[in-house]
Image (cartoon, rainbow, N blue to C red; front, side, top):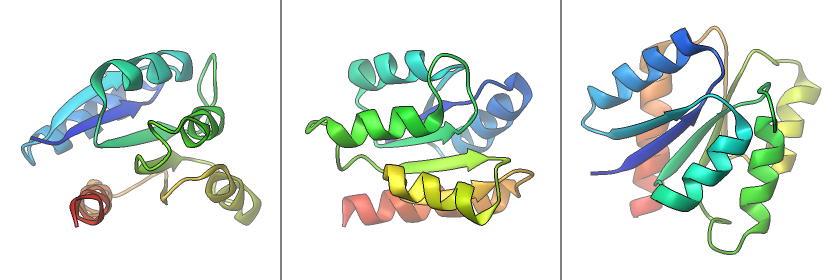
Length: 124
């Protein structure tokens, strides 16, 4: 069963994403900040990470950069989930190494479709 780590400081959004992904049969690990996200990635070795850009401790951008600079996790798929939707913000996420970018507010169906597509690419 694929493991997804979601780092989101808004409890309601994190709970919604966890619920939707669990309904797909995925194992979900939720955390509320970037520093904890990095620690949990090293513990659970997820198949995909979903990062909110604006979080306490470390931003999603910082976490993504740290993952990309670590040879063990450099190929780990990363999806950014954020309210920052200006072109420059999106570009910043991709420049940090994100594989995909979903803007808030988001459609849970769109998010689950993108998660499934990233997981399919990883297993191909």
